[in-house]
Image (tube, rainbow, N blue to C red):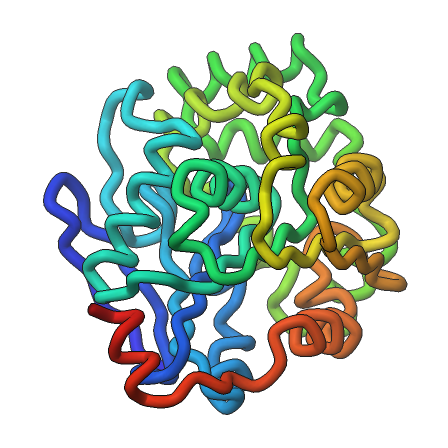
Amino acid sequence: MKERSVDLGDIEMTVLEDGIGGEPLMLVHGFTGLKEDFADELGPLAELGYHVVSPDLRGHGQSSRPDGEEAYSLELFADDVLALADALGWRRFDLLGHSMGGMVAQVIALREPARVNRLILMNTTHEAVSTVDPELAALGVEMARTEGLGAIADLLKFFENPDDNPAYHRVCSEREGYLEWSESKSRSPSPAMYAAMLPTFMSTPDRLPELQKLSIATLVMVGELDQTFIGPSRAMAAAISGAVYVEIPTAGHCPQFEATEAWRAALYGFLGPATASEPDRAADRS
């Protein structure tokens, strides 16, 4: 596994990658996430024959952080992922999107279906997030603009967090440093990104009618404790022809950490070992 920065013209994206020369697979993190959300998975997936890339989306991690709120949207995130695929020489690729990354993945699949070989929608939704409190969201936007994300993280400790479930607490107790790492992630993104995207989650148009038209092989997976996204996940699986639906037992919003073996079983069972020949892979990168 290596880390590098990729120049996309208007921004630079920092990525983790492994398995160069294998079948292309992009892993897209969620809101206030990081490329490291999938760091543990790059090696095992590379061993299966995949060229796995996990980027920091703009406004996150070590990627570029444009100043204005107008520089952030699901569509612009999708532009960046497609530009990254171009820079990698990928004509077609498998695409996994987690949470907000799953919304970005839907935008990509609907806009450029010929470029997505297989689609994995993980703990995400096709519609506005109904669990976001409008007043709290408005306060979060104002605080992001004036006080920064550290102040928001401190304030949110006094409110119920829908992601704060037994699975999360179990991982915090079992995995050294996980609590501190998780809390640091919430403080690290661009305030402009935070202020732009929080209202977007409350107002994004419902993509379910468009998803019904997809003919891409799709896996919809969700942790059984992630109440915010179980209903939308079931709806997407029912809407997309032939989609596979998996609820991950004992997992919440981040099943790759909370139920790793069950999550891997679902993902690997869907993807299988990479089977493309080297000429096929070269064609995909042409």
